[in-house]
Length: 221
Image (tube, rainbow, N blue to C red; front, side):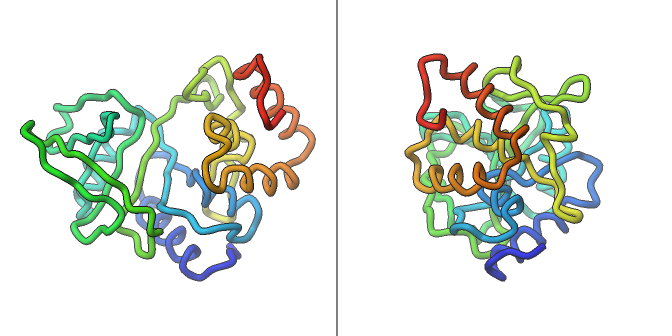
């Protein structure tokens, strides 16, 4: 795996080493997945994002706790719930984040409610593996389902690609997720670079999915 910076290479390698011996399926997503597709580090990224499946959620929470990570589920509105018992979860959002005590990327502020924290993220960039975010998805009958519209699906063999032993979410699916906020820093660059390298079938799939999601049009159409 040749990425443009040793630091990024180290983080990706470390998260693979952390997760590869587990029984649950996963794949790198977010900006690092774009870099894996391109073959180089295209820009700096704030943290490590991992795709996982809902059926494995409790196993992932238990495992990350066993590796010294605190686990929080996002609640929306700037709040998160610290999961201390897998039987007590809100399950209102599709992502959890895991951090160690020395993590500098997230600031947690206790509230009056038990295990509920106000959260602020500091986008300084992750330099060591002390923060991992998991985003949960569904698959069905050999297809990966797009979380925001499960009528949009992609064959698993095309949705999950591999760079040697590193699984990652395909760029057309990543760009579909990023399409909800194309003006966010770095997202247009992600689109320009990845779209330029995608093959015609990938481009056609993305354009069709964007047309379904945005019948009134989208900047990437």
